[in-house]
Image 1 (cartoon, rainbow, N blue to C red):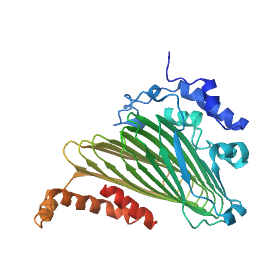
Image 2: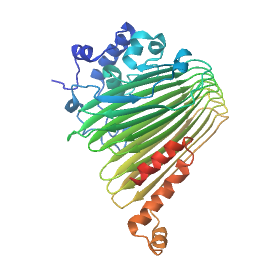
Image 3: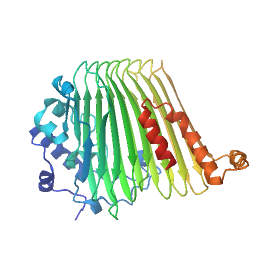
Image 4: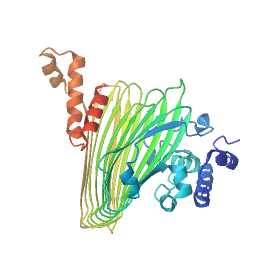
Length: 397
């Protein structure tokens, strides 16, 4: 008996989406999930992550054991057509949700994307119509409880509009392993601007698999800021699809591993249109016996002429028992582009430690200052002051 299989009856018990189209997509995702094998460490997308040890059947029945605290939409914004509701209501009520649902979060991408598409029953739906600027950040805090949480979110920002979105994930420890599988789809239409902030701060034995997927149309921009903290296995994958000319993206990431935690951080950019711009900076620190892998892909097909794309990754190891891997890559089929990448993995500079300790600091205090100084160039680039201070606090522990 294959314990990874999910029965159709179980799916219908969990799903609250009544739309026939959405149900059909979920049924299709269920079939894909049941047929897809678990990924393996030797797979390119999972290299250096020991995924084989994870047994998904241990987290069944898959449920959305998470509470969501969300911003209330002001009455004036609601009058102008801004919609914020739960995902299942949106799929039942709003055509836009159906049209965009799983457009880029294809169920056949991998086992965890298929699981999410087939089994989610919770999440948010945000729709911002044309020519609307939302000045205050929209905040979503997910508190995961129970054995499993499957969440799916969609944000659609129409032409000439702007929004700041903050997602934060935490958990209530239950004394045993927990699974979080979340997907957020972001659609930035012509001339729109989205600043998207993602923070996860896990405690205990959490297996986290989060996929953020953003699409930019003509002259649109998505600015990602993300922080990964804690978790037994913490995987964050950010995919950006440049589908419109003149669109751009920045991506700032921070991760901090301690104990025996493993951080798996991936950024993929696909320059599918001309004259697009991308800049990625991901920095991480490893303590104790923690480990990490960073994968960064820049892909430029023939259609992506006049692209300007850059990525950099820096990892600081605080101890001989840490393990860091960095895999930046370029796949370029266009001939009129500027693209480059850089990566460094290094140990703490003992001369710096000696200098600080000679001035009366303990080794722990000196190390804390070095850690804060290492992250500060990234933190200073974060547009939102409250997030800068929040991440500084998380870095300090």
